Image (cartoon, rainbow, N blue to C red; front, side, top):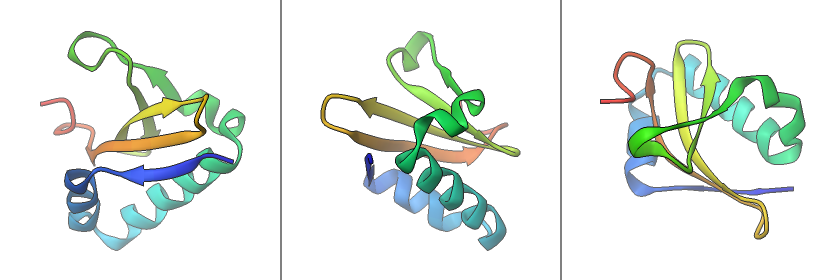
Length: 87
């Protein structure tokens, strides 16, 4: 099982979302931490300035994260609507 960590800025972004979006994202992150293979279709490696990071797709929202498999840690870097997240 992976441990979930949030950057302070990601935690603030998460709290600004409506409660329905928070609930969906929280469920996906918990599922990801328990069994990364189950959300494999919703995870994509990023390129460019985000190289080395991944995005988790949750409906119209995106979660930018970094995985450290050797330490079993997932760090949430950013959370937001898909139209705003990559700016």
